[in-house]
Image (cartoon, rainbow, N blue to C red; front, side, top):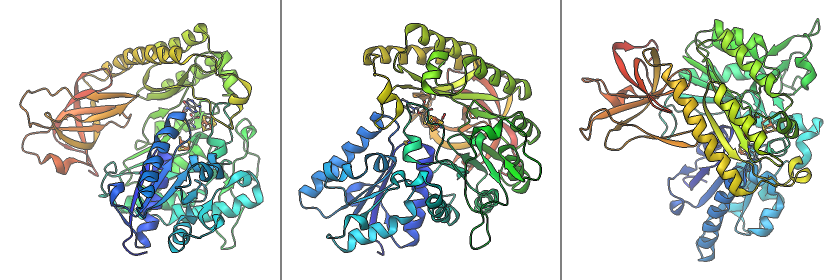
Length: 525
Ligand code: SAH
Ligand code: SF4
Ligand code: F3S
């Protein structure tokens, strides 16, 4: 399909952003081109998210717009990819006949064939245009075959560090697909399927290739990254290479590795990437699960200077009763112990998380317990979400959504205000210190950067009134946002994608203000 223009829009999490990047690479190699506006496209693809109703409504409104164009006689092919396709299934085709192609997140390697069939013939059958996993991804025999194909998609990625719209010189690498935790509110185990770990050699090869192509920061992705575990000598593909492997279950984290078994734990994987791919200046990972986060991981983080001492480890709630209903598998005290251990081993670590307010049955007392957690633990930020009942989850069946929306909103706002105070305290601690900053953007005081963080948009308060003064924005290894005046004499645009050293001069609620230290462009930048 040479030159056919595609518009691809992504909703949802980093996992989806990575999927979109892989899809884009795959389709570019087949000769498709990409455009920035849906009106210019012959193929419109939405890579969707189902995690909250709001995410779905946004995608549905876009689907509606494409429907209007088609009703007016425009020839455009509409594909819905990702978690919403998987969750809605064929029901979406019935309700939105303008949808031509559907592809779940576990089937993306099949997307080119689906598009091809749909473009060649309007009469293409549903089977030729729809690829969803259904319950298949939880049946292990079929699972391996599917995962092998998906694996090819990750392994064959093309990486262009200068591609527009990407965070400079940053790349993401998946280590685990899917999730087995079944938190009662969450769709992910249903849309992404069973937890499957990629072979460590595949992950390391991918990191090497990304580093060769210019990446200096890599984020490892998994829904519960610390539960990564790969047992060697089990599954071997026909080609003799190791294959993706289904997660072992939580018992595996509670007992020592049996003698004679060769296992790559998450700690070991981190250590290997750190040692075998030294060109990566910053190795980070999301999302951490607060349970079974081994001390060995913290020790590796302490001992390896290029692993960022940053944890995104969502607490979700500060109330034991609610944590139980959520099936999170830890108590508040266990969460607190985990955080204390983190700071004991890594005193300069930074901590971020997610919180859900208004979970079914959440009383004022439960909410106060969450407030208390946010007040007392050093979260640099928390993403705060109002509980959204999701079809297919355990919570929607078992617990009525009985906290009124008004109360959810109030709690959301109260918690944001509280988080802002905590963030201000955390940030104030960094004043006077020297930090490495990976520059991500160059902007002018007159047009301040808009940085989404913890649901709040930050505005750079330019130190000088002079409109047009150039400024830089970047992140520390601990993911703290730093804004700085561009040093005089430097070409600020050329600093994007480099690591510089800066002194932190002052702090705001969610932002540090710093000065670039002269002659301190750090090694590798
Ligand atoms: N695997 C990660 C989270 C992935 S989903 C973890 O376990 O931490 C990202 C966040 O969305 C979750 O941490 C949770 O705070 C929020 N979330 C998930 N389902 C939700 C729902 N039904 N309503 C509101 N927020 C939800
Ligand atoms: Fe969802 Fe829980 Fe899995 Fe995170 S750990 S993706 S919240 S089920
Ligand atoms: Fe959304 Fe699926 Fe990610 S539901 S949060 S896109 S895993």
